[in-house]
Amino acid sequence: MYPGDYCLCVLREPMSKDHRKVMARVALNTLLDPDRYLVDLSEILLLPYGLRMKTRAFLSFCSINSSEYVSKSRTSCTELLKIVEE
Image (cartoon, rainbow, N blue to C red; front, side, top):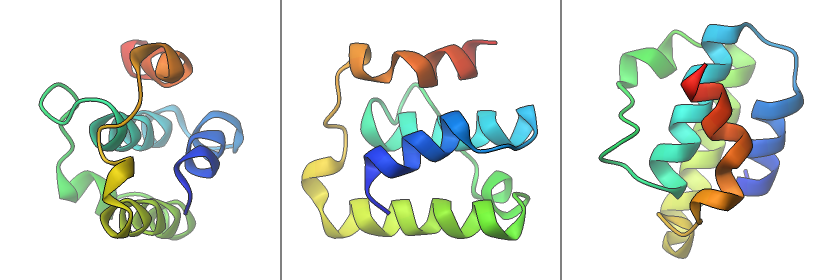
């Protein structure tokens, strides 16, 4: 899943607050700073099936397209940062 589509999913799709935080941290870990936004794989496994598959698709896309890894600025991740900091 393309990073922009994943971020829109995290921001707009109906889901619980806890699931949204996990998915936001996955995006921030991959796109911004892996040392600051840690994610445990067990957290991803606890996501509902549909959200887990979207997360896996996003991570697969980023692993194939390594230029997406840690390629965003903090300003482009403002909305995701708000979710994590709540």
